[in-house]
Length: 273
Ligand SMILES: C[S@@+](CC[C@H](N)C(=O)[O-])C[C@H]1O[C@@H](n2cnc3c(N)ncnc32)[C@H](O)[C@@H]1O
Image (cartoon, rainbow, N blue to C red; front, side):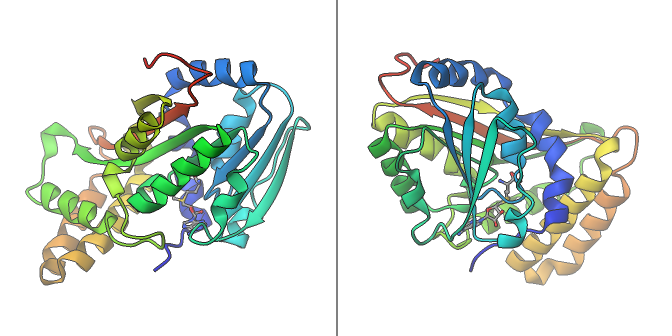
């Protein structure tokens, strides 16, 4: 069953995604990009173009971005604001021939996609990158950790987290998803093929000013947890109501762990940091 995402959710998370990304991996990326004379980028599962808006201004020179998603409605919003960046939308399902676009691309990237994919699909993606000797940057892959304000722990927090993580491993359209393990698995695949890798944390750190995003997250987690534990639906919904009610309290904190992974081909970067 293919996962669908609505534009309002993607808009809600965009500024938090951007402020959470692992900035130190930009140094090796930019060094490699410049040495290669790179110009083409393929963004997988682009949605409305959040990754394009974050990354394109950080890369020097003319860029040709191919933005690929199976949702034509989302993709219509992925536009460039810079004359140096041309954007080519491709409406395609990654489960089919989506990876054919990798050929001839300098950099393959994605944000908030890798936790949706299976190990077999990841293996195919890494193979496609290696065959084209392209670089890869996969940002904001959920790592399975959810942390709440220490002064307000709830007995149901761990139950919810575990149910959400189980739900993450269901088939999202690209085979049984690796969910929270996807980024370290992808790193292993790239390293086994001689790539240099940088796996860095990019957690969301949410406070009272992010209440709208926290509430949307909590609501989504309750739906996922109820699907996994239908017999506990009433308790799970009560947890959601308690957590949502506290989202604007001055001491509210919520941390959601993510990974950013950069992988560069052997000749371009010789040492792993
Ligand atoms: C969590 S959203 C991330 C969107 C965007 N990269 C961002 O950071 O805002 C995942 C995206 O992957 C797309 N997607 C999921 N499964 C897909 C598939 N099988 N083929 C193509 N796109 C897919 C969804 O339509 C959605 O836009």
